Image (cartoon, rainbow, N blue to C red; front, side, top):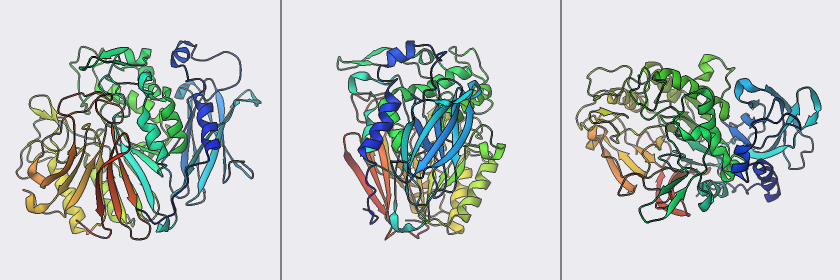
Length: 526
């Protein structure tokens, strides 16, 4: 456990005040969905809650959605009373961003609890304001003594399992919120844009799963508005909104934000889609993604708008957020002997090597939206991730990963740990050259966790190229097990401020710690 003083959960009054205001219009989702999208009179309302993302020692991004045109104003303070508050004038929110807005905060104090409130102002009469919506977050520490603790998972509203009011919605978010982490890393599949939600689904044991449904979840997403509606869907859950008001996020994307197993240049033969050009669908999803999460805004430069980035969380931790979707080559048998594009693209690989070598953090978490050594098929002959089941020398996308692993070893880059989700179970894999066909790398760990609110699936086969050993796995024995039949999974990482030790815990919903691994700092491999 960390030696840092445990950060007390934000005062109950502050959290309740924020979450109750955020949930007021969502307590009866059917009523909300039946109401007109934008009222013609009254004050601006922020009933979809607030979010904070990409928090560093001095900066953060604050998100909100209005129900009409409004000016976003953020106030921050060291106390709940908001005495001596600092005011941040955010963007004018309008229809071009689906009435969402993000305000960057800079010059924040390091290692401090920050209370904030977002107020929406009528752009024609600034004196007419909506009720403030409250939240809180902790900035990254300036020194290592405080330690860092965060959670990760992914895969939300997948395989037909959405918000079920009979079981209290996405209750796992309430469990994660009560752990009060410094931040949450979502490893992709934040939505299932290709996943239709039916009002009810019969279960094998005779019970019935009920979904809250919306018009946008009644078909596969193709238009910009349909993608927006998919991102908006999860915010109907009061557990999610309360979580967002207390826990900052680092968000990456994978395939289901667009369509299952998509890749650039793909032309669909799926009869559910009238728009067959995946690049066009991906552009629409990317726009909606950036509208609905606190990430660099649509107005940023092309370089800043890329999904891959480093989020620096003090001297103990850098998080390298990968995009293993946007720059990949086509899914194929993946056995080519020369592959410079791979799963990252040449430019992203160069960026990752450069930033890893520049990092001075004790731990370098590589947030991958897909696993390395797990075989993920795409149909009968093609493969979706890195591995393709051939245990020999690197081929296809494995060539790019081999180049990266070789670079990490020869540059003596210490403290790399791989985290991912995607496969809908939880496991721990140790990779070692003595077991591998490719041997020019230092040992490392890869930890898998998920789903958060989706179907569970059996464990994938391992590919021996990089010598993975499955040290732990917990997975269903059949495909698409509902959240009522199998617990959902998330992981916890705790970095001790005194020793620098990194502890990984794989957790199951309900409070159970399934597996624990402690890693030592300052090593190129272990």
